[in-house]
Image 1 (cartoon, rainbow, N blue to C red):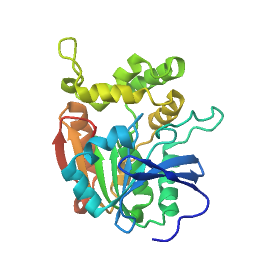
Image 2 (image 1 turned 90 degrees about the vertical axis):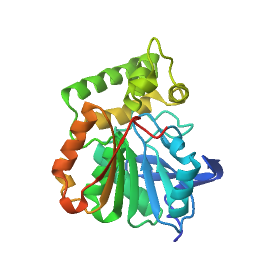
Image 3 (image 1 turned 120 degrees about the vertical axis):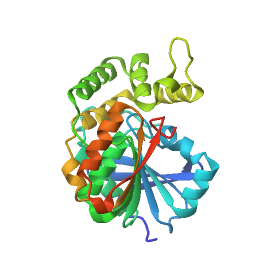
Image 4 (image 1 turned 45 degrees about the vertical axis):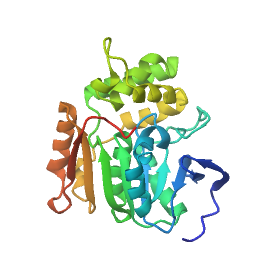
Length: 283
């Protein structure tokens, strides 16, 4: 693979998450952290997590599974992209910096691919991350070989989602990563059975995720949430996709409604494979 471009900083001494190396890529919309793991001569798999998550909290369950990790890392070099300010140990982004739009975030992915001299890649994203990667695929069709999407979004927020996101935005702005906000996020990530209730305690994985949320900078999470809450409908763009797609959905009414929207808009020759599951991310 060709040498990396000189307009970004590579943190050679820092090994994070299964021996991966972190690169800080400077883009037109600010810096973005990319954790690279695997042989760079292999095909690239780009991941993008959901709101308030990064590669550790969103994908570690998948990559800590020996069978899945062996399969993925045997075939791919993995590039974990974190939303701006969501990486491990991230500082708070300056309040004067403009909030990126979803188009800015999709364009960041193109800049990351160009930085690493990558051609067409596989993409895997969860919910908000799935939207960003799908938007990227509709804008730069020749750069995407396939999509793996978990609980994906493709339409603009409904009134109920918009209101819920506004409540979370106010909590982040006034109270930071408080307990109530964590509850909102955990119910976004996991099913009720996993989250527990007054009679059933939270599962270990939910408790671990709750602790990981303490590490997030509330101002950085707020910026990503604002971008996602202002997203536009990309269903018409689904018809232009050339790549194959694998979709994982939860067996709840909202997820089924979202899936129907996807299927109605998809080209027959690139129609997605479907897999049902009971948890909203790979944690």
